[in-house]
Length: 544
Image 1 (tube, rainbow, N blue to C red):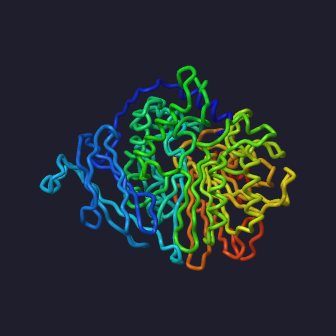
Image 2 (image 1 turned 120 degrees about the vertical axis):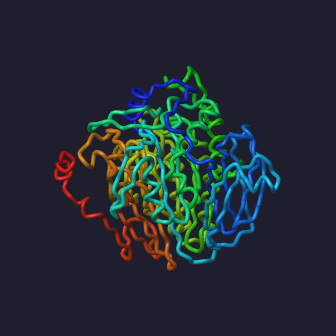
Image 3 (image 1 turned 60 degrees about the vertical axis):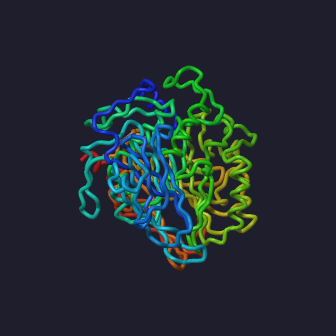
């Protein structure tokens, strides 16, 4: 996050810790369900009994009981089941029932139940088409669940209330979704009303009047977002892969940091928040405890995704501007990634992270990603240099980065012909940036030029004539976005950056023969015609 964004948070969102208030109920169904971690033969099903009673939970798959367990307040009435020995590329239906007793008779009259579905991944050698979405940045900067928020999609559909983006994505029918991070904002309040910079007020109902410190605080953040009906509907039909970034804990945090933020008590250790946040993340998402956040999954012949953890193993942010190397991934994760990329036979190797490779984030002394606004290779950029050199030296093709974090939409290309850091032995690399899906819009940010990164496409408040750090709400829906990617039988990859109303901002088609960024003679790129309007015209449109 940029320094000016952090200043905004400190000045406008100072709230008490451990206080929780609401008007509308946080949850809207008796049972919350979601699936995730789908492979060719397994899935993880997560559920919560929202009655908040000690219950027996039964998981049914295609109408038959698969597993049972008891839930208590020890896990805030959540549970995850791993189901194995499934068939590949098959859609399964499942249901979860919460009962007062584990007897068969009690299951006939459960306290409550919910039904969902998921599709397993294709087998490793199967060239079946695959599609997915990637999302990030939900309910940040004070923009929460607004029952009065309404958009009209590009197809003419009116979508009202709450997190409208999930309705738009559900209509696309993706096979799965990547939840890259900042899917809660533990350090942000959600007030009853918030002034919109361009005029008017945004209404939040329910509200959230605390910053998270305790385990229950972090749990409440997940329950707040999961209470949205559109999000519930999407999750019941779409398996997810969860990652995380800073706001699951607190803004721009790093391990062993002692927080001096006025939002917290003096000398609060970030590790305390980290431990509570991580436990809540595993409780409220379909990922088994003990599963590493950095992991990979293959989806048929043409696609493998490497889920990266750029938060847990980093060195302190201030070290990112020093000449000496500092860590972003850490030695173990970096070696794992190298091994995975070199052994992968997938046509496309997707790097999924919540922090961009070339875009500068964080203020001076608090650079939060790789970039540091210096042409020299400094700090964490040494680690990125190591990775790029490995990809080049081992002639690894088909590497593409999908990311988020910066709250604007972009396509970034890194190319050795433009590199200013003195290192040119790397392949061109494309990075596609989305977000926010429902939070404040900022940017575009400044670019680090060490590895020749430039914007091929950018859309943020500044692009449309607003202030760079305007914190525009979801109602300025032109600036809210998610990503969609699909691979066909021949291995062609299509990437779309899409507005929450369904408008395609950018579409890029890549063929497997030429898989890295730069020139792609057999690929095609298209941008919606409206985005070629000169800046002055766009500004006049905004004023009107």
